[in-house]
Image (spheres, one colour):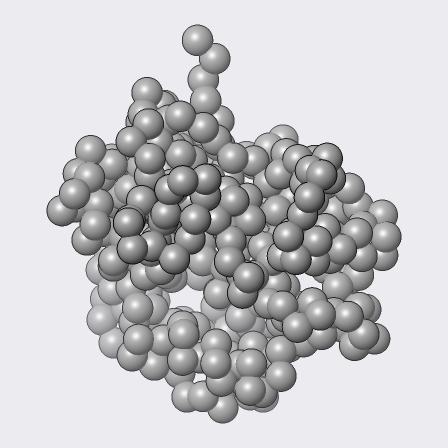
Length: 338
């Protein structure tokens, strides 16, 4: 039997009708790390065929539903050192792939307005960059979008991602159909993202308005997720062991931001000062699998960040410490003005 393979941006539907979004590229041999996104609910506001679904937004709500109703999708992973959500291979009914969705929509005889705009946005990205390795993720991928849904784009391959990023930068500067978020857009986003704000609104707006991976296309929100391609991923399950070492708030300097646009995003840091929590100044990296932490700081900037401290251990015994962001609502990263 051929081993199933899925990556960030893909979605999985289970035999019992749940829909999960895949996290990362590295998964155990018998299951795929993925988190609950949609489930059937008679009062749901999303319809596909004769079924209605509800979208689950926060990680805490996803975990609550899984623990209470579907514990078979919760497991302890010894490599990642924590409990994760994940779908066993024998529970998978379908894997949705973003690139395949584009081909499906191109052939579809009748498109709704969201699908039309999604293809138009992809065409603009393709024409401006000459990059073809693009896909559509999110609610459009699984056919559960509403008239207000975002356009979630995937770009595959490091070189392709850098080219599309530059094209997006140019398109935003032109300010025609592709635009950066306005201050009012960012105020709305601020209210949606933070249950208990760790960052002042003015800092949030300053950081978010310079991001290229998000904005509006003809009035519709979009997010572009930049991913390495399969042959560029240098890690297999078990190559590294991740050990939790507490929780901390730190101040540091960004030394390298080359992977800040990718998911997972990474920032090399130095001059670490622990402000609260686990007193470990040998942290050399900040990382996250959450798109909201992409483009969060630039090389040379001072930052304040809060998240889980992990020790990363390689097979050869080499190790380093990192701060991983995104598991808790209190996690944040904020660059300071020079």
